[in-house]
Length: 295
Image (cartoon, rainbow, N blue to C red; front, side, top):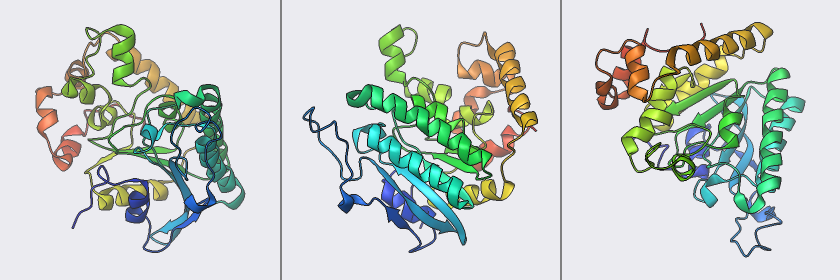
C-alpha cells in the first residue's frame, strides 16, 4: 500500500524513506534539547524543537538526515532547530556519507526568535555549501502541507538537488505574507489554484527550480532520492556559470508574465490550463521539451 508523504509527520517520513530499522536519531526527544527562548515568551516547546536528525541508510547507502516537523510552529526555524540542521551538515563534512537528506517543511524563521532564527538560517546555507564543497551531495525533499518558504526557501536552492511533489510548494515569501504586504489584488492567498501555479511543484519543475517531481508516495520519493544520489553533484565553476545564465535568460523571457499560465504558454504549452489536471507521469512526459533547465 502506497504511503502518503504529504500526510506523514517528520518521523514517519524518515521511517518511510530510509531502510527499515536503519535510523539512529541524534539528540532524540528524551535529550530535551529545546529552544532557550520559547518558555520565556510563554510559548509551547517541543522536545526535539521541531526537527528530527540522525543517520540511516537508503538501499544500503549511508545517509545523514534532517526532517522538519511542520506540526510544530509550522516548521519554523529557531536557534536550536537551525543548529541541529547545521550539525548534521558539518558532521557530513567530517564523515563523508553518501548524501545528506533534508526533508524541509517550513514557513521560514520563527518570529519569536527572529534574530537567532535569521542567523541560524544563514548558517544552514553556509553548511550546505560546505558539505557540497567537501563532495557530499545535499538532496532536499519538499512535499508537506506547509511548503518551504522564507530563508529556508533560499537554503533549498543551495542544495545539490530538489525533489518535489505536485503538493509541495517552494518560494521566498509565503502567499499570506505577500498578500499582507501587497494586498489581495496583488496575490490572493485564498486562491489555491493561483498559489499552486505560482509556487507549486509543477510550476517549479517547469521553470527549472526543482530537479524531479514525483507522485505523493514514500516509494516515489525514495526512488527519486536514490537517482539524485547516483547522479552525483556538479560542484564546478562552470555549473555555477550555467545557473547564472539560466536565471538571466529566465528573467528576460518571463519577466513580463503576470501568471504561471503565461509562463507555461511561453514554454510552448498549447493548453496550459490542462496542466493542473494531469497526473504526475502524464505531466512529466508532456513536460519534456517544455521546461527550462541546465543540460
